[in-house]
Image (cartoon, rainbow, N blue to C red; front, side, top):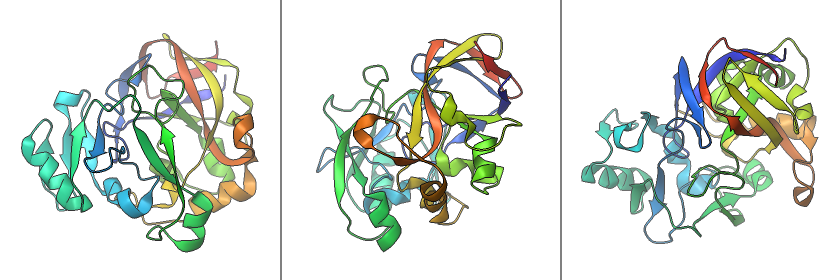
Length: 272
């Protein structure tokens, strides 16, 4: 056995704070209701992502809850609560972000998000005007998905321990499943290519280690800014997730769903 599910997370809106779950359903798109909405910049057509902190870090001050796009509720930093869909919500988000945006469950097929150079963000700070690249969404996820690469992201407690971070730091890395394990070190680095059974129903195939951007370093709600959240994996766990990327600071792994079903905190995680 690899361990057991310590936490389950859903992030209904891309780059916003998510919600812990006692149990959930998983299918080919990932956790039910996960990353089903995104903020779209009306001027540039870019998808809002805190990977470009100077423009979008305020998204990480908004808490999103709900298991479907038409049942999402957002709590803004001022404490106001808004339901989606509601025409007033776009106005509230536009004021928060300082630019005209739309909250949507559909983005153009060729939509891009901007990713700031993480090393430059570390060196110059999240408000600096640093180089950015435009990245497509989806990767190996189903068409129309709003995830960065794959439908699911897993992190182990062993990796958090290896980074000297408490379980409370989990939201910085935005996993869907946190796996508690007695192993040591960055154990999930050895999982790509393997299939995992989670609970009685779900089977996942692990793809690659997850390269980290500037997002873990940013303030996440009550969690303050912490550059060490990227500096530590940069020092301790640089691996090659994909040949074209070269060595990257990585924490966790991406996975696809082979067989869907119910999962719950406490479920066993073992070889399929």
